[in-house]
Length: 143
Image (cartoon, rainbow, N blue to C red):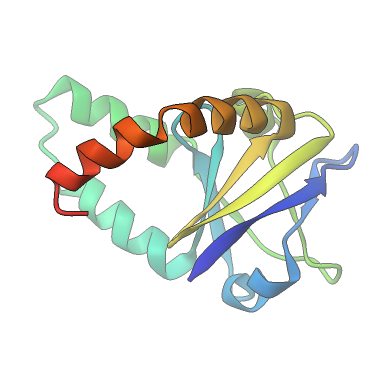
């Protein structure tokens, strides 16, 4: 399980150090792709397979399912940890997420999200202000 929020830097070659506590889970390979809210999603190989299989079963006759599948699948890239526990984030994904030098790696149970630090702080601040409303809506869903 991935949980927590970690500050990291991205070097000039696009390398990001994965938090030490997550490296074992990603040691056999991982997939990074475009995420929602202009961040990146990082999945273990097993979690990626589950998601990709679900996406492959969506009806291609619906425009929104085609669009979402393209966002997630066409943007995906296999990544592996180097000896220092870093992954290389492709340039097109760094541009998509607007990643600068400072990044946040956020654990969200079955995936990691990679955010530009300033965008994360803005997003988090806005979410914190509306947390009561969000909790009320989730309560209706049984959470």
